Amino acid sequence: MVPEALTPAFVLHSRKYGEAHLLVDMFTFTAGRMPLMVRGAASVKSKRRGVLQPFNPLLIAWSGRGSIFNLKQVEQRSYYSLPQGKALYSGFYLNELLIRLVDQHQPVPELFLSYDKTIADLSSRDHLDLSLRHFELELLQSLGYGVDLLYEGHSDTAICADICYNYEPEIGFKRTQVGETYLVKGDTLIALSRRQALDLRQYREARELMRHILHFYLGDKPLKSREFFSIFS
Image (cartoon, rainbow, N blue to C red; front, side):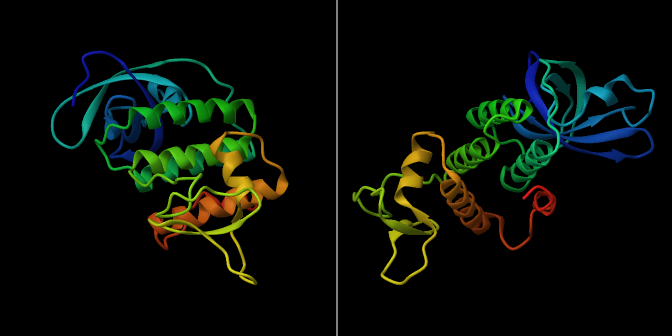
C-alpha cells in the first residue's frame, strides 16, 4: 500500500542494513506495521538519522513494491519531550508489544491513535502505569482478544466490586473459591473500565492481570523490555 499523502507514523525499531542503509520497523496510521528501507540513513551525516528515532511523531510517505518499501519522505509531525527513565522503558515495552503481536501490513488506526496518546502521556510522565494498562487493553481489543471487565466469563453476571476473581484466557473472569488465591478484585476491574485512578493495591492487581493475559498471547519468550523494569520497581 503506497500512500497518496503523508501519513502519521512512529519508529518502533531500526537496524543497519548493509553499509549505509537502515531497515526501519514503522507503525503507521494507514497501514499498520511495515518495514521501510531508508537509504543512506546509517551514515552519521544523514539528516534523516536524527529524525528516525523511537517516540518521535512523524509524517512519512513511501514508494516501491514487494514486502519492503522505500521511505520517500519524512518530517516531524509534532514535538514531545522524549520519555526518560521509567517512561522511556515503558515506551520500549509498548514498541515490543506491537512488534510481537501486530502483524505487518495490518491497518489498526484506532490502536495507532491509542499509541499516539500513550506516548504523549509517557512524555509528560502523567499516570504512567494507568496509561500502560489502558493501552494493553486496547491492543487486545484491536487484535480481537478484547477483555470484558464488567461481566464474568460466558455469563451475563456483572462483576461485583467486593468479589475476588481469577482470569482464564478466552473465557473471562471467574469467581475464586474459598481459600483460593485470587488475581484481581472486582473494584479494580470496574475502575479500569471507567478509566478511574487506581490505588496501590489496584495498580498491582491491574499490572499482574495484564501480565497474565498477555503471557497467553506472547508465549514463553520473555519481553526484553521487562528486564529493564526491575531497575525502577
